[in-house]
Length: 188
Image (cartoon, rainbow, N blue to C red; front, side, top):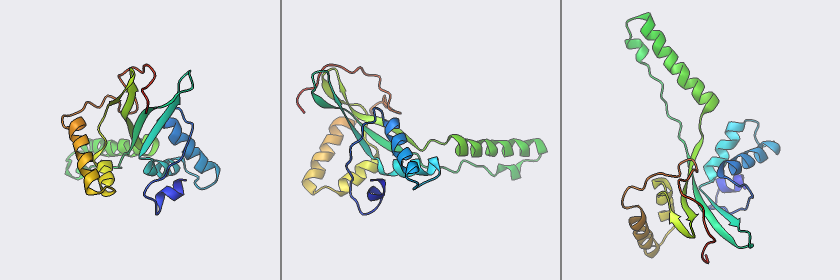
């Protein structure tokens, strides 16, 4: 599925039973490692994150009614070169060592604990209704518009204006929401 999504595919749909977005990424990464396609966890996870734009999480209430609990956007974190070369400007050995250790710290953070993605809920089912909680990234909005005719683009632009014209607080960055889950949803 990951391979198919990387080449010659406008979109890929599949089902999975992960309860959270990080669990989904981990499960797909582990599957790629298990089949021997990759032997490095970070590389496998990077491949997964590059194809997971959105996760539409369905749930079933105690009555057996299925509904969309949340839609989550996956946002790959681009690697930035945060190294400085200011050590050449330093006059003292102590200053040069400080710059060296700053760069070494950035390097080891990137190697050992680099975040490959963040995620945020863009829609959640809250207290019996669907609530738009965060805007979609500009990158995904641009990609979505490329696949729309003029009428759809116009309606999509109105939707964006209606819901995100003012700055929406990012309450669900990293999948955490400040809202409560509630009653059964209305018909979807």
